[in-house]
Amino acid sequence: MPAATLYVFAISHYCEKARWALDHCAIPYQLQHCVPGMNRKLAKQLDHHVPPRKGIGSLPFLQTNGELIAGSAAILDWAETHRATDKPSLNGTDPDAVRALEQRLDAVAGVHIRRYYYSEALVSDSSTVRSMFSKDLPFIARWSTRLAWPKIVPLMMQGMDLGPQQGKQSQALIEGELDWLDSLLADGRHYLDGDTFSRADLTAASLLAPLVNPANHPTYGNLTMPKRLEETIGPWRERPVLRWVNRLYEQHRRR
Image 1 (cartoon, helix red, strand yellow):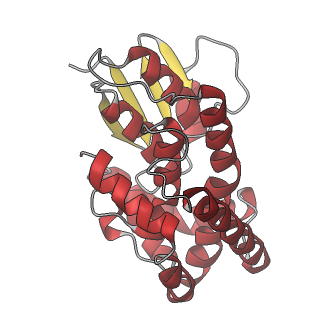
Image 2: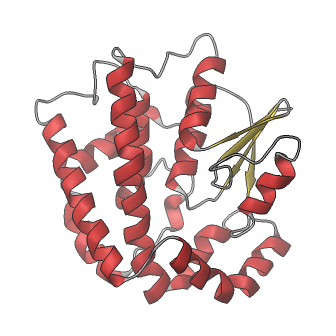
């Protein structure tokens, strides 16, 4: 049996980053899908033996050998040190440059893709969000999510600073990040830094995946974009960086 359990929201691109890292490093784990709104309570249950830690309430969580690791970057760090001996490092040829790229992607692209999507989807058709959150939950958990959804939506809107104006702000920031990534790839490179697939590439592909819906993504087969989002995102898919994301999923993501 796997010695590790990965707690995720099916819809989360940060959870996909952690899941891909464990898969890439050939680390066995049990996948546990979580009910929205219960992640902070879950963190306390899993981490009750240590003082509360800043940021511990944000999925993904990895529990292994009595240790709770929170956040996709920290889980990727752990996976790197526990990878199978025949699996290549994700640190790249210039680890400092790779880490800087990853941190920018986490802080800007990841945050604002999430904010942009939810600012529209939770208002125009929140049932599509609920269906993704409910994916792979046990039957009772799916029904509890359905019943609690009218209360969950306003909490998400408030807690994540969502709304029409916020969505427009995030759209502009996303377009700036896509321009930046296109410029990095303009010289024909296969990867963001160096000649090997690194944690920066894995992060970029995972966090941009909601804009692409790659065939090899383990959960986005049912991801539906609201009409207004699709009208904007559709043309983006012809950009070099989003075609590159599709290639990374084809070449490096195995479910």
